[in-house]
Length: 333
Image 1: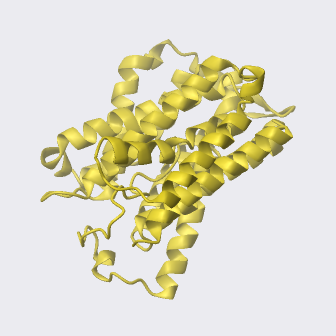
Image 2: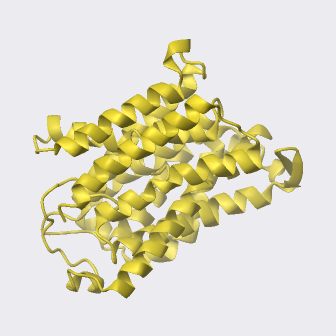
Image 3: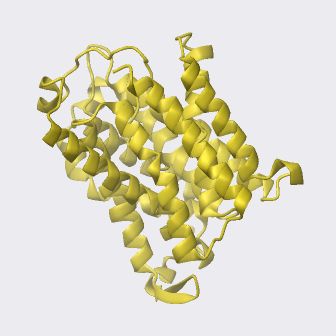
């Protein structure tokens, strides 16, 4: 969530959401079996696309591109591709500027920068599994800050996810993984909370913003913020003309770069946003949990990052906890 999830993939309010028809598809509150199947396929495509971001980025980082420059390449490239979408929804800038700036700062720049910094120090699968503490942290925010009720099932899921995290990082060994890398991954999880909070806020009020606009302007604003911070003119972009190594095999650097921009960002966001038009946001959020599984499997196959039994068991608990926490809300819609 991503670093890697769709910005409207989860609703904060456990109560039935009011009808705010942002698109024509919302005119029918009960989707047909055919549209639900289409929504599920799109949500699965989004999770698979998002799951490949770390696997595509890591060879570029190992070839000499800094994590900051790598995330700038991803966000700026995607923002450039989605410029037509931003232009079509340009009225959103005047209607909800604070929302779009906040989304670009936290949900795009913050999540991606922290996640890419994490995978430069710890395995991709571990970083993403830690980032999936975002949903349990979101429940804590809803309960403690917004003072909204949270079901026992959701809280139990959060507890399971935290237990899984303890197994992933092997706390009994005093963090067997790089502690700074773990902190970066936790930072991505915290930014993911802002991701969901702001996405939910975009649907509320008298001036709701189309999710497509939130995604496009979030990436555009994130790219502008990252440009000031990353200073891409200092990067050695000539390495994109050479080859990189992925699990002992050489391939052109442009292959993972284009995969990261076009598949793991543009395709991932667009399919994820459209899927929410056919599925309820909580259900789409549950499907998005598969991103962590995809990322771990791809990192295993393409990067040779083999995880031990404790990490695999902990990862399963993190996913199960996140699934239980989100599906607790989904059953109420």
